[in-house]
Image 1 (cartoon, rainbow, N blue to C red):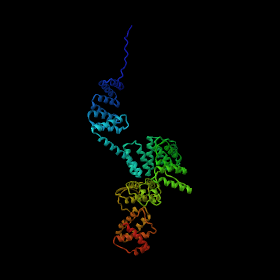
Image 2: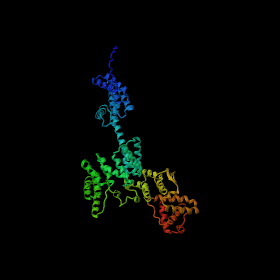
Image 3: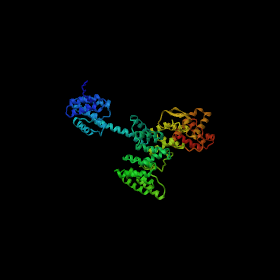
Image 4: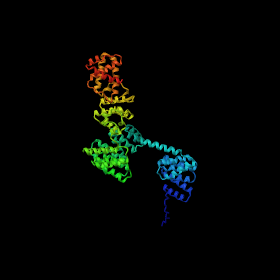
Amino acid sequence: MDERVPRPKVVPLRQDAAFFFERGVQFLNRQDLPRALQSFRRAVECEPANAVNHCNLAGVLSELGDFEESNQILQNVLNDIAPDMSECYFYMANNYANLGEYELAEEHVVKYLEVDPTGEFAGDADEMLDVLIHEFGGGEILRASRRRQMENSKSKDRPRSLLEEGKFHEAAFLLEQELGKDPLAIAPRNNLALAKYYLGHIDEAMEYTRQVLEIEPNNIHALCNLAVFTRYRGKELEEYKQLVGLLKKVHPLQFDHGFKLATTLGILGEHKAAYQIFLQLVEFGDRHDPTLYFALAAACVNMNRLKQGKQWLLEVQALDPDSGIAEHFMQEIDRSIANKSPIFLSYSYQLPFHIRAQGPAASESPSRFTKAGAWMRDPGVRSSLYFALIHGPRPTKREALQAFAILRDEETIHVLKEFVKDHRQSEDLIWNAVFVLQLLPVSGPIQVWVKDQLVQFRLPLRDERLFMWNSTLAAIYHTVKAQLTVQEPELVDLAFEVWLRFLQTSYSEPPKIVKRAVWAAALEYVVRRTAGRTEPQAVLAKSYEVSIKALANAAHAIMLSQ
């Protein structure tokens, strides 16, 4: 019988990273640092991509006094394995302090606090920084860090400030730069959507908002913005109805979200829902803000609860007695009650435009923007102008262009340069915008959509199409040009210059022209006089069959512009 010797059972020894980690911890607990070091080195060899193993190894090296190798390992973690492992900066700061490299220690502890100001070691980092500054004469790195933080804060706040100032194009440019640095950033994308909306680029605004919702489907600001943008497309759209229904079901936990949501609902005409949220913000918050109480007043007034609205305005008056806002709207409510007339309050905490402008009872219509004034700094007015220019009917577009001629700032130039490239606009309006650009401090090449293609022109420009925006004014020039071409062709160029200067001077308030012949006679008279070939007014009046007095008055107006 073949007797076989039984084989012993072999139990495999587990020697993976976890095994060596556990052994390393055991040796540390026994204060056996050399063997702990050996175990953690083996753990790193088993799992070289595990940043925690590297940090443990660096920690043991630090305990053994090998601060330089410890920092090499920590720097490698930050460079190649886990760049977001902020605690490495704190560990390195400790190592540098032990090496007597106090400036490097301060640099790394400041870096840790910059990257993770509420991190696990934030308290210890603050204490270390205090020691480094007061005992070793540091502080310059901290001061430099704070300057950077302030600059970064200003840089991030700049686009928002530009939005509030109505400089939407400039804000959009800065926000696009921010997104280039951080493509997943939410706040810049929401603000960029608003900038595009204010500029009249509805499709782009909606696209940016949808991108936010792809990243954060429940982002309150994006949902609110999308509802406003969709409303522009039409209240009857199913998407708009669904968005409003969704917003009315939202229960925001943060004050800012609640205020944004309530304001949006108010803008959308959902005043009852807006009122309930504003009321909750008052009841469950500790903010005594006149803006919030004014929003409650607006919601009440817009629901025709006028007396209740007036009560909220009394709260506003108590909190902000110097603005005059509460007094103005209480008087408006009293007038509405006395006259039994309807009243509507905007949710924007400010006086009406014509009161802020401190002028006569002016309309916000662009046709009344003939002089510089407070309206130039009003973002609401600017936004209306952009909408009018892009989406308004032809007469409104022309009125908007008149207003842009007065604004004369970089924002205006950007908007007009985009407008003259827009193939959707009529040729006469495009040339009207070119005319306005030539009024502004603009020189050099611009691209203009002409005859189904983009053509490059250089400003200042000599081109009769600059008169296309007004057929009457163009006809006057062409009448005189025809006369001079036959009689004295060398004066044609001068006629163009004289007429262009007159129209540029009078663009915001063009003359009332009852009879073209009067102005044609006056233009020819001024051209001849400028060239030293004075023709008696009576002769030109007879030639054009107009009165001498009418000719003289028109000629005087033209000469004032030269």
